[in-house]
Image (tube, rainbow, N blue to C red; front, side, top):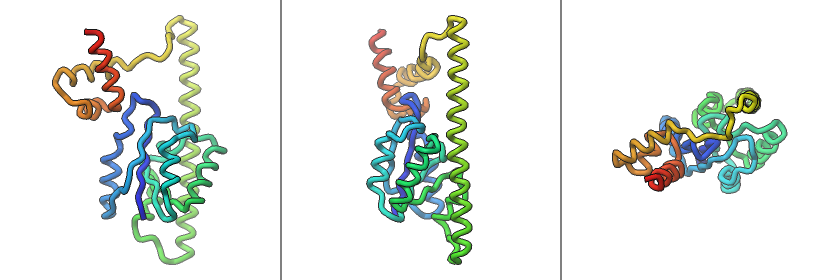
Length: 207
């Protein structure tokens, strides 16, 4: 069994590495370790995710796809989710998520009784489907509210496109002045390395 951890954040402003320590701690509780990490900044509403595709390509039957929460794996539409599940099942991969307790049995002592194994497997699959549907619903609801907010702002002449996160930029500037490295600054602020590099470049050009 190879445990392959998938970490995703929607934008480059967010740190996809954030969950690394919690995933390591989780598997260590079962005396296991993560074989490899697949990290990317892509929307969970898209199947076009190179690192997820690479994870599936490199996996063998019996491997585990580990995520912090199901919404890190999917915010897909029902049809796209079915496509992803079909690929996962075809490869013989088990999905384990920190927010899906029944999936943790993959690392524990799964019942040897065939009937109980079937029952628990059915329950786990049902809960997985519910969490996947909830993640998509949450995504669509947030998208709807965002569009409504943009329309209202436009009507008031207040919307001028996506604005930078000035608070994070100020924190990056502070840590930079304090002599923190790029990695330490990214970890402290909770953003990606590329964001720190980009903000530092802007700061340098504005001097």
